[in-house]
Image (tube, rainbow, N blue to C red; front, side):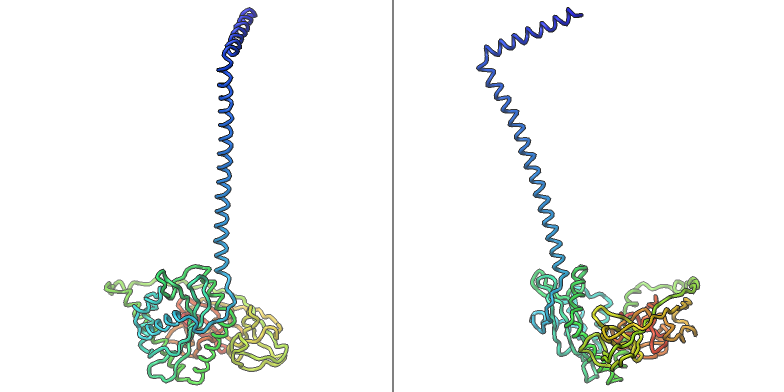
Length: 439
């Protein structure tokens, strides 16, 4: 075994000797080849390292660009949500003024095709309402356009003041509407009622809460309410007009839904399932009492320019409806709502009120519900009247009329019903108004 190993070792030594002798004899040829091979290996390694570095740098650059783009988008979004404190401008943009005048002329004539050419989102219900209202409108007069710059170039938040002239009435009724105006690809302005961007909606909301817009709204609402207070026949006319238009819109929508497909008498008289009686539930709410710390004005809205309704004497107590973030408190005053600066009020007490809800249908007269007093009513804030509306004893257009609520008036809110009515507290009793007319 050792002899075999020795033979192998001797064989390897002989071969290495021959290789050494070959290299020595051919050194001029072998040496350049060896150097070239080594250089090639070094070059390959260098190129691989260089390419790896380039790839890493490219990846880092792409990541940086992506981060920069994302930050840019965040900056744009932030800019949209930032509403500049710029004063309202009156009739500052001729193109916006022209758009609004043409739009209101089209509304007064009831020409839906033209209305839709100016407004990108007039649905069928609104179209019917415009057509029905136009039957009573003679014109929109004294149009004034107040604007704030919108969230993007070529956009505006417009507040349009107008005086609505009805047929058979000499006096014109003041009104105010807000619009979001945009510019299309051709450079033409249009009313964008179909905006769905949350950031734009927030921008418009924030712009409308700025002091000069609130003051303008309060001024118009005050003029409107004062006019109706001085002319009872006009106020009743507007309420009846609203109900007539609602009825006409409802009938038109019903006819369009039925179309040419009529149901047989047997299909229309299908037996309706019996409704399960709702179980009584208890609702707990807090009623706060506040008192004036000094003599202070009581106003019709949360603005120092709003009409004075009276004066609160030091120590006089009120039921607090809502303490607002703008420094004003809404109180119950003379069976309605009014406002006092929060800094002149202090809390006296908080009363916990438990209300039993029997789950009765609102159209069914319930003696306990109808005679519920103001102190026992489940009041949870207020609702604001969007347009003149009848106040009724039951949740039905056939219900007894117990009063009239005017645009801008605050009502004590109790519950929004599924049948399209809102339950309120009015003059110490439970009453109802159509939900479409309060917010």
